[in-house]
Image (cartoon, rainbow, N blue to C red):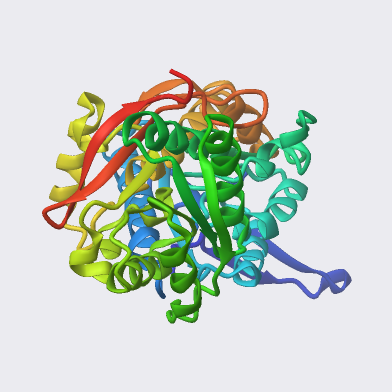
Length: 409
């Protein structure tokens, strides 16, 4: 448990009152007894257990590394950062409960996460009501920032407390379509999704661009990702004549789906978004993964000069789980909170104001710095200004980058 300020209780019966004397002033954060340091908590919400934990643990560890780096550098004078990581198990109901718990802790001045767009939908209002900044390193559903009618050109920012360092499916889906049609020579696709916010949205933006380019949709269908028996849809894929399958969803289902498609005799690649870009996909699909593609947000972290220090420090810290697809974005999300706290403290004579949350939220909108993943800043919707994307292909049992760029670029 986090260290809390000690409270000396002095009982006074006079006038029937009970007097509480606090050692130090909260001023928006708890005051540690030694040196007057103020503890600022950065909440983290991600799936720390279950099928998607490989991604969630990378998010948690990377945010933790940011906090440790800030403390080692004494980046914000008089402030010590701590991480409070909660497990949402990729479930919206758990995410909402976690959001409520984090807002109840007055020391929490920013939250990193979650992984899933559907989980974020259940959390946004809770954070917004509390004026608590939320920055996701992984959410890609455009509606989270631009409202439910974004595709019709009616872009409205519903929650000003929500930001993300990952680019959206409004860019990722079309980027994949352009690569497959123009570079990979795929003209006939079978589209499958898991009916979730992320998967269905991604598949929809892919379809729109693929057909606009002149590609043909050989068939469409949905799966229950919990089933793992996809024989019905696999039969449809085999008889459709498609030369590629596009899947909107995540790796726990995508791996077995790819394996079953190849086992049926349909030797065509499965392509997905950032939700399948993980080593676990390759493990689940086995040899069938060879030749499959994914897109993911940003450039490959290991290839960026700005990321070399992050990779070295992550390794040095000894985390047993890899930083995975969103590690760099999680670090940058946490660092955006740290930068905002610094701005607020510097503007308030070296301490946090009583309305620290609202001030930090306001400061997040204006942060701009060179992060692990490149330039980190947010547009008027809270979306990342960094629109970089990368296509990966499974070769030799590993995801290897084949092309980076931006949609339309």
